Image (tube, rainbow, N blue to C red; front, side, top):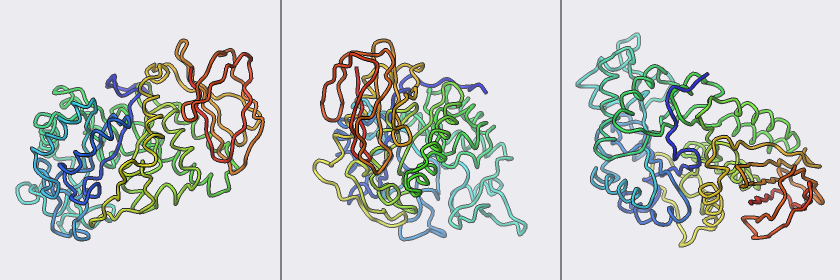
Length: 427
């Protein structure tokens, strides 16, 4: 299956950081968030994904503040966060620091008192009683009717509004598989004429392959579930992880799997990455940043945040002056930015044989003379004298976390690894 749209060049080795504006600061505004921009840029964050910035419907609102994903207008800013001038300023500041900005786009549904419900009620699906409804049981939203071409045009115009008014760099498309794939073709053809954007889909490409003809990147939900099951089963069946990785390796050319351990839904409803993974959280973060594709990071993961954030009410993140995992993520993100194996689309990871491969995943990335070895102990056991077959890529290597240097003169590398640890060696 061929992808119809080209991948924007900066996306190959990027990362995406999700911004929960409401919970990011006590003020919960764009202006307050802007104080964190330089810190995030220093950490190596490349793309800021803002959860929906549009106003939230009051009718059937959940909690005291409502869901970001129940909008009342597609072309206004949630006054809780500030003004369009404030958001435009955020984009300008991010661009000045070398970062991109994408916004969350909720195309399947709106809130109950969206402006279209009065002006264009025909834009919505109706149930057998002739009333607005949502097919998935979400009682604070109602479904749009994609058989209505006028609605499609209005949706695309709204997307263009943010490109023209704020110069955004792309969209993260909420539950993209609930919207007909032909609409995304239509939208991308028109919007990309204004500016070539990055399009991230909230769907799993293994379950919805047709959508990958349109989108640049998509979520690896099956990997997330497979790793959770692996941990719950006592980290005994690593072959299941290999099988899942193999499936993602068959994605269309110019598309990227997006790896994650947390996001706004996972954190609020299913638990933090530490509730789900415990000691496996850090090894998974290393994997997410070094395997083929792009890593997604949620607000506060660099703290690290051990708290489930409320979804419909105020519950701000308790920041520290220097988050404990800032340097950890900085090492990974700057490696992705600067090592040639991440800039080269043909430098796909290759699994390496090791002597304890029922516990250790080892792989290599290579572009010319630039080589990267990654070793991850996905087990609760301390392992000694692990033999890793490096092939013919000998030379001097530097481990990015501990600063250790090894001069590898033979085919095999021998290492000891504590439980749930990782090593990333670069040349």
